[in-house]
Length: 375
Image (cartoon, rainbow, N blue to C red; front, side):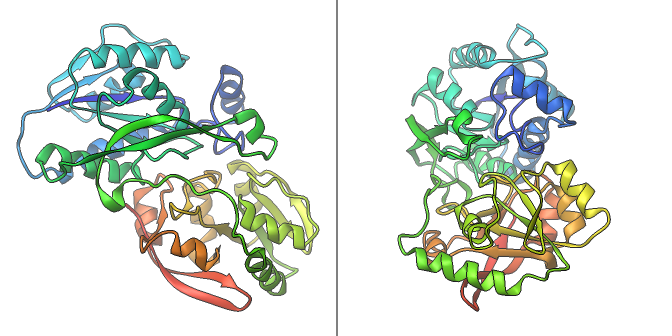
């Protein structure tokens, strides 16, 4: 088995500091100046560790990777054997062209599968070089994850790869590569474009669905949820309102401006701080208790770890699971077709602690119990 391994080292760098993406040198520089830390290597390391733990067989494996932070460093740290490295070191500030060059080199190695860590922009880079020639498994490490070529978590990506290597997964299918306009995204406009299809292993609940956009056709459901939430708000308590159109309905009911795609802190009917970064949230939580209000990504089921990386492991640890309100219509739950809700905070230990049953507010004084899992 010949496995390609690529990391976009800057994937997700803008997430915790509310930059809505990581594309472009200016955004990455701004993110670093705000104290953001690269996390793609951590996600990639989680994948490799999960793969090594989940393997059942002893089939021979040859790895092909880009140098340094684009893959080889992680494999070396985990002492993965039989690694061939592209003989060109990437620059400190990698760009799409560096990914393209590494992918072209890997394609010439007759890969059986490519595993890559990044977001939708990275998926576009992979598609531009590989097309549908080689099956891929995406490790979700970006801010934007609309494409269906990613596993639901980094750990799940490792399990999918193990199943593929051991012969437990034998079927592949084409799934969409999608990306949004980041400039429009920062103006609260979601414009998702289909760029093509790539092959992925068929692995049921471990592979992500294409993000379902938009709100329910029956907007009264969202209005009922907002009415109920408004009646439950404690004027003495801080509320951290997550991203999405479902939570935006609550903000509209309260006549409070919201960032739609960010996290807003409100109290007593007033906006305390809009479009909060991870550091902002930690500062707010340092001297007061709070409740986080998050919605469900339709078709995928993520409530934490997609679209709201500002709710980092440190922030979630300060909050506590008991201070999480999950909102979503029964229609959104039905769109999951029985799949559970998902948490992918980048801290597997915390994710396991939070997994279990959660209450979902689905209408006015209407709630259901639904499973939340960590993959």
